[in-house]
Length: 114
Length: 113
Image (cartoon, rainbow over all chains, first blue to last red; front, top):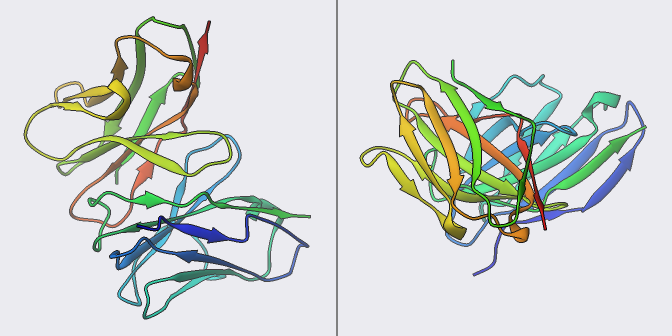
């Protein structure tokens, strides 16, 4: 059984650029959630995708957008990067929609915006 | 809205001593409560969770937590700390009525030899 994988591991971007982060969910999972974890803080919920549709969103601006594909992998896109977007971005997959099912986290993508 | 407060950003214990990490929650609906552990440069791993039923929840690696509704608490304990327990621990709350999991700011556990 393959766990949740994320790519790339690290990324450095310049303010104003756009970035795409990728996540492969665990086998059998149809739901993916994305979190932003700033240094020294707990993860903050960005949004969740269930069967290719957005299924809940946290307090993040529209320049944070996502996609989920038929194989349930997912992308997080961030436009017009700001310095405060520097963080660890975590992807988590689960068996079904909502957050009451156990979420399996990937190792994260460390994004640095300069 | 739901929220979690973790008391103490850093906790230091000696190897073999009791580990107690504190978590208080706020929720207007029945909560689901979780404890996660994060090792350096890794994602989060679930230690245990409370949904309904038994208020004392046992998790992996000898950890357990007790849901106390009257105190709105879900503290994490382990009778005897091991060096490998050194990590960041996060308490989180959600419910069956929303898709937003709220995490606390985390507690860094240090284990001294």
